[in-house]
Image (cartoon, rainbow, N blue to C red; front, side):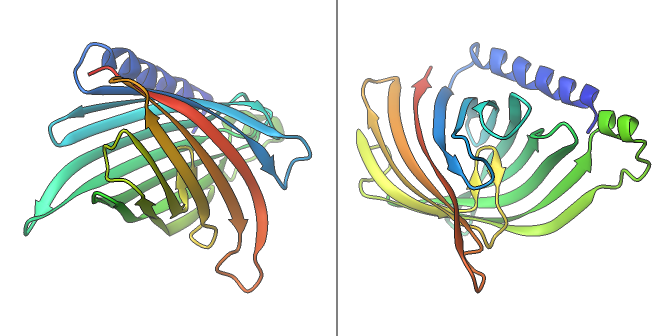
Length: 243
């Protein structure tokens, strides 16, 4: 994706965020991450902003991620877009989600992911399962600077996407805590062999505002013969329900 395409995607997300203020069933959220990963000697700190709009069975979410400190030379390191629709098959309700992630984490190489997954929510459990495609590609500026003609990119096809979450209290309780095992985050999709463990808690401090905190552990090759720690980070943020 060239620089102008990135600009158009940013404009689209900005319009969606602004439009969200004028419609019902809108959730806005922001959070900050702080932690450490093995590929960088310095600490990692990121912040993100997200908006979700729901109308009947349809949901649309979008957002952006900024890296405040870390190995990336870019400040903008993630763009996120997700659409969901609720369906019922033989009295079994679930949602189908389509996701798109763009990660411009380098001046030379960018990455995008697209995926489709099913989301099943119960009072104490959430399951997500699907598949996705990842592409690494050389940016247009790097192609011009280094005179690169082969721009086909590198694909990872049909990665398995998954999440299993358990919460102590039923969904919608004033406070809750739980644990998740997943290879998904808002601006990250890991290979299926690299799951992340997420311990999380939330508290609805008022009718429109919920605060939450999470601790994430990232592995490297958990399902391989040799497994190592890749990093960890802590997240804290809030969700503001406009309606």
